[in-house]
Image (cartoon, rainbow, N blue to C red; front, side, top):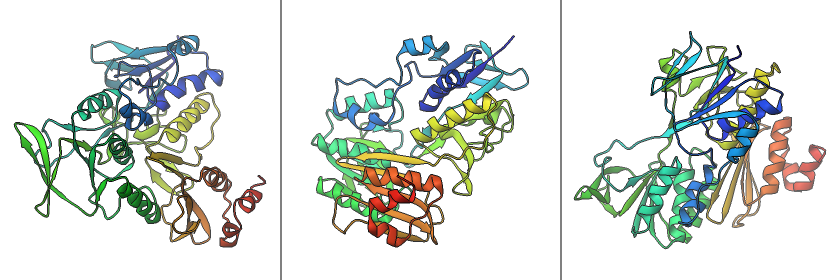
Length: 406
C-alpha cells in the first residue's frame, strides 16, 4: 500500500510542495503537518501591515478548499516528536504515527534568544509566528518607548512600522552597520540615514550589558558604556537558528541546519529538507549555505517535487530576497560571498540606486533600492552567468537587457 509523502512544516515551502507534487502528476497520499493551528499563511506581512492595523488578520496562502481539492490532508496543531527512519514513520506527541514513502522536513527556524541578564523579563517580544505578532501588536498599543535589538531585516521593518505609529524607537546593533550581513555598506548607510530621518535612533557598534526591570517588566536597556535607553517594550531580532532537532535525533547529518545534497536529499535518500532548515551546496556561490527566504523555500519545494517524480537535476535556482523598509524597497539578487569589487549605478544622493558585486570581472550579486527593474534584470543576468562590464552598467538598463536578449 502506498504511504505517500509526508511534509513536516507548513510555511511557504511546506505548503508549496504538496501543490507542486499534484501539478507534476503525483497521485499518492500527501499529508501536511504543522504544530501551528492556522492554515499556512504569509509570514512577511507580520512585521509590517499586520502590526499597523489591529483589525487585519494574517493572509492565508491558500483557502482550505484548495487543500481539499488537491487531496492534501492537513494535520494542523499537531507536534511531531520523532522520526522513525527504520519504520518510515513520524510519531506525534500524542503517540499516533503516520507512515511515509518520502518525508520532507520544512520545519524552518526559530528566533535566537537573548542570554544577557534580564532576558526573561516581561515585555520582550520576537516575530516569527502569527501568535508572536498578535502578542506584539497588543503590547505595542500602550508602549511609548520601543527598543529593537538587532539591525536585521525583520527588526528594521518593525522599527519603521513603530515609528509610523508615533512610537519613540531605538535600534541597537552590535555590528558596525545595520543590515551588515545582508547588503553592501552603501545600501546599509542609505537605510541608516533614511531611518534617522524618520526619527528612529540608530545605535551601531553598541553592546548591551543587561535589561533593567520594574516589578519584573522591562523598563530600560543598559548599554556596555553605562548609559541606558528607556524601553516599555523590547523587540529582539538577533537572527535565527534552524529547527533541526528532529533530524538530529533521527541520526541525519546536521551542521547549521540539515545537511542535504545537490538534490536536497538528506543522508537518508527517503528524506528531503527544504527552506530555512536546509544547508545545501549552492551552485553559484560554490559553497554550502542556509538561506532564510520565501523564494528559496518555495523554489526548493518545487525542486523536491520534481525529484520525487523522477526528474533528477541539481538545484541551481538563483537566490533573491526583498524587504520593505518603510518607504524603501530593498531587493537582492545572488550572493555576494567573495566579492572584491562593488560598482554603484545611480548618482550619490538619489533615493533609487543599485550596487553590483563582482569577484574580479564575474558578477555575483546585485543590491537594489527602489529599483525593481534593475532587480529583475539582475536575476536574469546572474542566472545566465552574464557579467556586464563597467561600461555596460554606465550605458544603463537598455544595454543590460540587450545582453540577455531582453
